[in-house]
Image (tube, rainbow, N blue to C red; front, side, top):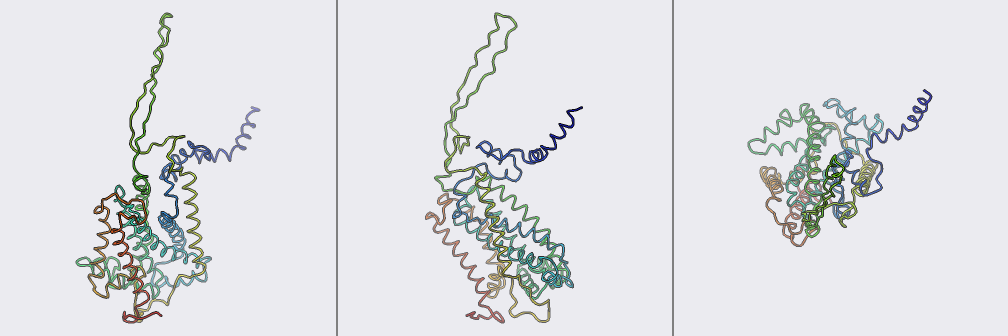
Amino acid sequence: MSKEPNSIGKSVMELPANIVRSVFRNPLPSSDRGRAATSFTNFFLHIQPVRVSRQALRPSYTMGLGLISFFLFVILTATGVLLMFYYVPSTTQAYERMLDLRSSVAFGVILRNMHRWAAHGMVACVFLHMCRVFFTGSYKPPREFNWVIGVCLFGLTLLSSFTGYLLPWDQLAFWAITVGTSIAGYAPFVGKAIKFILLGDATVGQEALLRFYVLHVVVLPLILTIFVAVHFWRIRKDGGLAKPEAEAAPKRIPVEVEIQEEPAPVMATASAAIVAPARRFTIQGLVRGPLVKVGKLEEDTVFSWPNLLVAELFVLLLTIAGVMLVSFFFNAPLEQPVNVMHPPNPAKAPWYFLGLQEQVSYSAFWGGIGVPGIEVLLLLLIPYIDRGREGVGRWFARQRILANSVFLLFVLVNIYLIVIGTFFRGANWQFVSPF
């Protein structure tokens, strides 16, 4: 009985350590085996490989664009949930709520600014990430399907930002969505149906606001989350980031395996009470692919813990700091409330669709549907057309000069169209000089 108080006291003293041990299955690793176990047994780290190429950690190779895009999505989710506590998807209240965020809600201005600029930043970073993957040839086998997933993620990112554009319910939002849905209506056979599904009516109104709200806060984030998870999983299963052929080539490593037989059973008689000596067999063979062995590791790789984790945390902090810095100095735009009788001249789509609007000014079908449809189809088919293995994992490799030149032309033309639509189009979509 006297020992019971002592055991209780000891349990109380060890309470913090017991709680930590119940949450983390392994202590902070101090050995190679411990670092490997940390990646295997941690729920948040097991999606990453135990070891990662040194090239993958070089900022000059990936520029962290994939991670920045993901972290911007996390920021958008967090700020969006907080904004949902106050926003009302009603044509009679939405604009008033936007005004209240500026004056009445604590940190409302910062939250809205962070959400707005993170959305624009995510569109830009996903596009730049896609460019990085192409210019390094990282879409080639076995990563071709993950490239297709990435193209779909870019489209979902555009749709997510587009649906959120209407929610402030000001002149900018109303007429931008009016133009954007009009472009969608140019699609043959299904254009009018798509436009009606988006708007729920013939014009932008309460039904459109409610549908855009549901798409923006529920449907598209859920689909994006699933696609992002599959995208990360395929990166792991497809061998990590693409590396140059010389570094990625499988190695043939001789392996010796010792198999020790169990000792023979001891006979009951004294004369037979001799244990048969253990026999050892050595198997020599060739193993394809990288062999990870503690104490004998590839020179071009390092453990994900803590090298990759520290790099990811640094990118996360840098992304948050960048979004907050922009949010402190630049407020998200909010124009006058919706007035259907006084449209702006010209009414412009969101900036990332201004290239489409510029093309539509030349041809409604080919500019809005035909050419963009062909571009998307080619993007999806690129990894199944370009099957060569030359120049993989290198920026602007000489072996891929033609493919990179064509893709660079595609990028520059689209950026040029966006710039023209943004700065050089005035009333009635006439060409004007901003200088």
